[in-house]
Structure formats: structure tokens, C-alpha cells
Image (cartoon, rainbow, N blue to C red; front, side):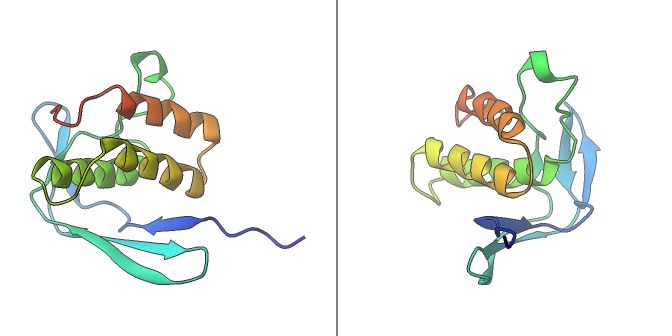
Length: 133
């Protein structure tokens, strides 16, 4: 049986060009291009996150902080999620926040995270309002 292709694959620079800033956050030191490849093989530029953008890493419930690290392997997907929330806040993209959170879940699972791990992160972002800092 041939291997199944993921529904989407997100491509980020590795490592993410960032530096720590106050309050357990990070600031991008260079623009970050986020590419998306669909199950069909089509590949296109999804967005460019500009240098200087500040984000807060991976959201996770406190009970899972030992397992899911704020600056762990999901950091790039958390960066994209924070960028999309920023675009929502300034009115550059439409609502609802749920679709941005759902995109994160899809990206995590398609990126090889277990459904349980992805769901823990998804539930953490679902409990935070879109305008939280």
C-alpha cells in the first residue's frame, strides 16, 4: 500500500530567525516565508511574516507544560498561528478565530504530530481570546 500524502505540509525556515525578548516572547530577526504544499503536490507562498514580529511560542495548558515546550518543535506553527491572529485583530482577514485555530490543528497533524498532542495544543489556543497578548 503506498504511503498517503499529508493534506497539507507547511514549510518554514529552519531554524526560525528569532531572538528572545522580555516576557518569554521572541522577535523575528528576519522575514519568514511560509510555504504550503497541498496533497496534490501544488506548492505556493502562504504568507511572509515580517522581521520584528513578536510572538509568544506554543500555547499549552499548564498541566502539559512538562511535555509541550513553549519553544519546542511546534514553534514554527505557533508563529504562523500568532501571525494569523494578528491579521485577524487588525482586520486584514475575516473571522472567526475558530478557523485559524482549526488550521493550526490541521497543520500540526499534517506535520506529523500525534492527534493527542495536536489536540492539547488546539484546546490551549481555543481557551484564549483572539486579543490576548
